[in-house]
Image (tube, helix red, strand yellow):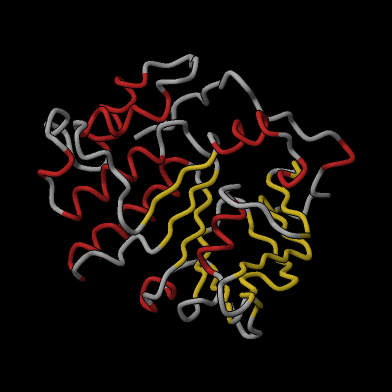
Length: 249
């Protein structure tokens, strides 16, 4: 499907000025000295330990490592679902860690999220699930028409009025991908997108995600335990205990 013109949200994230530019490095995401800890009853867990890395625009990057290595936390920090204790994250030259509340919310609307457990609303139809992220905001597009186009693009044409709970796991993940693309994001963050799927369905989702990079000019960052998926990405970033492990590709 041909990429349509980007929408304008009611609270646009400002375009980076000269002092915020990436210097022509080609990196969409620049992470510098990122630290994040979580306190539990027994200990303090360091999920990001002075992390620094760049992620190139238009690339597909796999975050790999054992459970608790910090993969999901890094995704959540890049997507501004969590805030770091220290360090900075710049996306397209904009330091998102320094944004005030309304502008941070506006930034989140420029990022597409795909989760392992789909996070669909069970009482809504497939089309409503795709359109709902745009409904509270003023847009220059029809969320329902774009939702229909995206559902057709992910192979769910004709299922618009079906309740989300009546779909298979693979179909629900396709709905989640369509929803992630509604605002035409430059960046899509996928957290274990094949984790709840059988191998055959997981392969379909992998092919769909990879096709999106070409058809929607999207940068993908995927947290995964799937070594076969990681091997097919442009780059693999290995994490352990919140730190980068040397030897990633």
